[in-house]
Image (cartoon, rainbow, N blue to C red; front, side, top):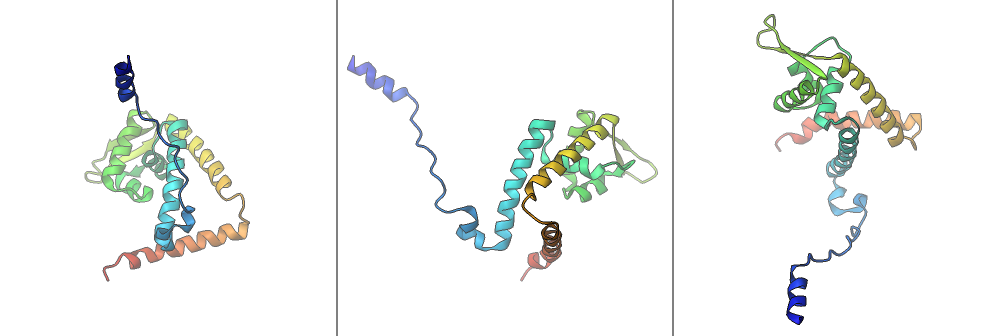
Length: 174
C-alpha cells in the first residue's frame, strides 16, 4: 500500500503557489523611469484590455478594430490608405481586411482605374458594426478619462501630439 501512495503522489500535478504581487507598482518600476518605456507599458495594458473587450463583444482583434475605424463611414478607402490610417503595416492591414471580408463586414474589390489598388468598403452589416464599435470606444474612453477635467483632456491630447511629433527625432540614429 505505501508504494501506491508514493506513486499517486508522484503523478499528481504540483500545487501552484499563489502569485505574489509585484515588488513595486508599475509606475515605480525601474524600467519606467524612462518615459517611452512607461508610455509603452500603459499602452500595452490599454491594448490588452481593448483587445479582450472587442474580441469578447464583437469577435474582432485590435487590428480588425483599427481597420474598421480607418474605413469608417467613407464610401471607400484604398487599402494602402487603410493601412496608413490604422497605423498598421500593409501586410497586417491586408490580413485584417481578409478577416473582415470573411465575417461579411467589408468588401474589397480590385480597381483598374488606379493600377493595382484595391478598394475597401464597409458592407451594410459592417456599417452597423462600425457604429456599435464607435459607441463602445466612446464609452471606454469616457471611463478612462472620467477623473480628468475638459482642460486636462485637452492638455493631454496636446502633450501626446507633441510626443508623437518628437518620435522620429528620438528614433534617429545617434
